[in-house]
Image 1 (cartoon, rainbow, N blue to C red):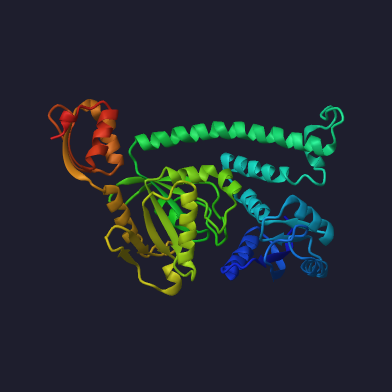
Image 2 (image 1 turned 90 degrees about the vertical axis):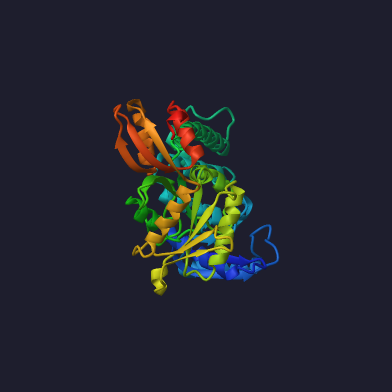
Length: 419
């Protein structure tokens, strides 16, 4: 993307106009844009030709020419016709909100699946905007012998894009199958799965790094994390969980982009608990929480239990604390992932959630039950262990009865071993 741009944000009677504008500037800066100027305006409805009125379009053109800006970015979704008309009128490249987000996604994607998802979303977005003749596609494929009888360059490009989209879908199906198998193995192991969610730039990746010791990219930018990153994490009690770091949410995520990043969202939907990270210094934090919950409902994850984590308390020198709702069920923790203040409280709450309805059980495992013994230790459920006379083990474990019976059944162990 060009480094210099003029930003345009129009108010269509939006009560959150200022908040949306601030986020737009952050989005642009996260894409590496040097913001030359910002133009705002108000309308009741978009103009069919230029999205904005003729007078506002002339104001934008004057600003583009004055700043010699090669790019104008709209914080709105433009139709292909509006984008084409604006480019001709402004004499510069025009990018809408979805195109801006896709550009950030393209910069941040790291895994094979993430890159495929980005390319798919870009091609689907591009397929409705073939207005200039995308000859680079033809050159990429060799050109001669490619075009059908009487086929225009535009038709060729559309066919090439269609073929590429079909190929990407095939690769994604294969990758998803592998990921589904991996998720099935995690679920069968009875290891709890937790996902970090929250508004973008709330500090999820910093918290993830603190909990797991992983070197996930963390920066003060929107969408610093794009791909789901999964690590095994051991709580202070010794219990093990699987922790997933996901892409941050923003206001009004385009639905086609939600679908494009199903990899991240699938991890969220398969979680046992969601760790909802909130920037404690954000004046709009309650609205952010509602926006995240709205997206979670859209993707079918609204029913999953949440633990609210108010992060960045070091910025206002607040003390770490733990709050409960009226029924002592919903936990809210105030901490700093940056300096570790309050992390002990988080471990306590996570351990309490993992423990759930745990009961104390005594087991006499034969020497052949080594796999079950290892799984119980991996879960952090073993409290005491002694070697039995037959070469097996006498264990005292704290675990939910249903979970323990499921493990024993999976490993072919007789429930009669329970005392």
